[in-house]
Length: 94
Image (cartoon, rainbow, N blue to C red):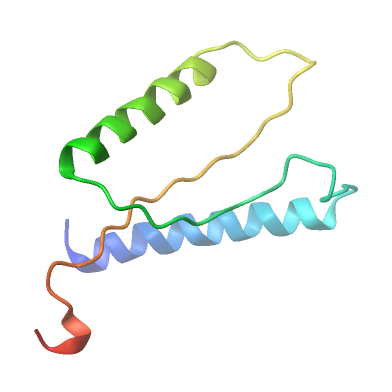
């Protein structure tokens, strides 16, 4: 996949999240008490630790994604990006 294609996919994801967030915020909700939230965290992992963590997350997602929906449930959208620091820092000319 080219750099342009990768950036297009990321931009599409970003705008989809932005649209969903805007629709939620403009709806009848109570952000302080509701399920809405986001976070960002910096992790220091070996390749093996990263793969283990990612596989654990996939297992959790599968558990809930495979269930049938019911009227008692509410749809929750989750997005995840793994963004390693670049090996070569293009902006420093290394």
